[in-house]
Length: 84
Image (cartoon, rainbow, N blue to C red; front, side, top):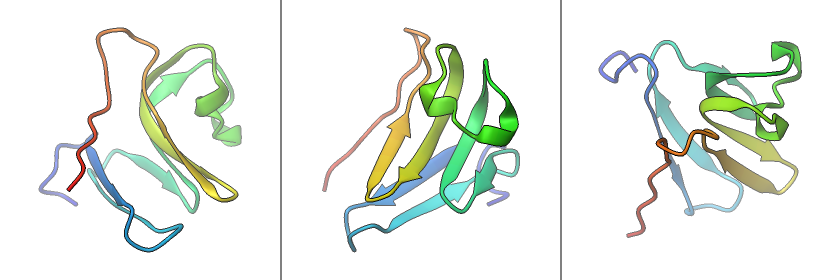
């Protein structure tokens, strides 16, 4: 979504089970079951930033029947969540 900042993403979850709708900027890396804007201490090919000891950025990992929203390990960064 070119209107968003390059590394921004917004996810909507909770409607249909197992469906997450995501809008993201042009520099967010995506795959069929993951999304990330960040760096971590592991090989990029594995896409397992959610299990890294050192992850800076944010992302989403879909694992079986669960969706994991992954924040940075930095104490000054956070993910925001809103319910309607």
